[in-house]
Image 1 (cartoon, rainbow, N blue to C red):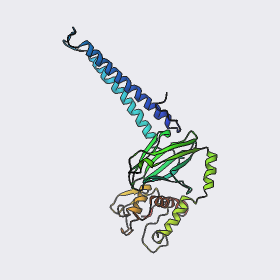
Image 2 (cartoon, helix red, strand yellow; image 1 turned 180 degrees about the vertical axis):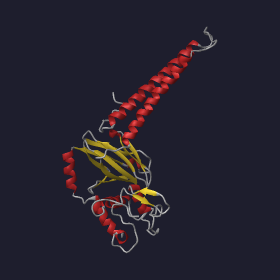
Image 3 (cartoon, rainbow, N blue to C red; image 1 turned 90 degrees about the horizontal axis):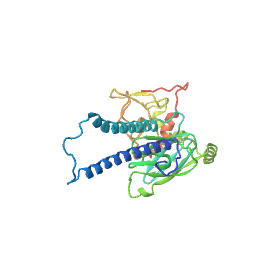
Image 4 (cartoon, rainbow, N blue to C red; image 1 turned 90 degrees about the vertical axis):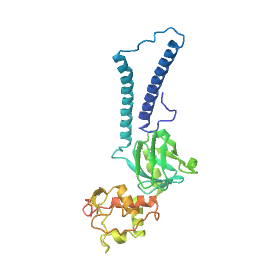
Length: 313
């Protein structure tokens, strides 16, 4: 029997339940064994009972057995759990990215095509989904019990979580980290749909792509005035930047991933590209995390002529 009465609605859920069942059985067996021996000794060596209290167990093999066998079993459980943890932190290459912004007290969802949701996440069955999450304010925690997945969502830092839904339906979504007076109301649902139904749902939303929205924001916030190739301002060219190594003014080199692009927008002086003056203004508090995600999507879409990306120091 499963360790939980909740439905197993993701490919990850059965493995988590098996691990939980094994931990429960092992801990229960050890607890029963310890208490059984304790009660037996309490009865046998109670006051007034004629029992030999001289000496003790001198057999080294017995001592090693009752010490090393439980240790090996618990070490096996540890290795099993590490394997599951590593799997949860390694999304498949074909996983669909979905962007989550947590804020007091709601979940804001953005799909790659620009579709937005609040407190609801639609996903296709059988397709790995990778959640890229960040908090607008305090620490939250994205928790879907039916999928057996949970991940803290932090301000100023991207965290990731992936799953593959295997059962159609609507499943509760909770914040499992106390995040303020409205914490109990920060809940929503994950809707798992057949791929054809999901495609029809996406088409019905008729939203512009996330990168297209980012391009509009890129112009609205004045980014194009400095970062366009024809601009008179000496600023880094963003074409082909994503994923490329970026030399910094302090001599170090970083990779232009989501975290680097996020910090370049809100904390531009923390990592200044080599050959450039630290003159870019900070947009921290001026634009929301949803807009930053759109800007990052736009930068990801930029390629140099010929389709080959490279960094411009």
